Image (cartoon, rainbow, N blue to C red; front, side):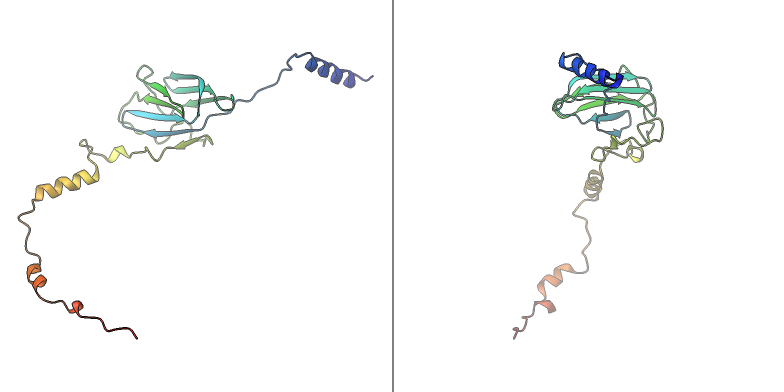
Length: 185
């Protein structure tokens, strides 16, 4: 019997006896979305029914790991952050659909153009445009456009509007377009 054949038989025998063969298990990253605010950066890891959630905040790094509830796959992410965060003020919350991390910025008011320190593209990370807000251009009042418009209209008043080109006179006179249309043949 050759040495390769005996080694193969030995492995098969170990498998039958229930011994584990060392395998390298590659952990996959969890899909995540992020958005920026004046004082915080939010990162949402989209994992349904997550178990054994671990979030570790470091001043310039975020580490996340959990078990996916549907497949029991181990998911793990590690991010070198664009800026520094306040570890004590940062927190996370687990829901049935995701794990939301609130990273409190060490320098409030400084915009983060990206989440990661490096400009490399992470295929598991995307911008959450539904929650994104361009807060740099906002005034301190933080009024939406509709609120600003309503406030302007209220300040103008409604009783002092000028007569618009004799609109009352036109209501009384017959318009040229009020004539009866001829029948179609």
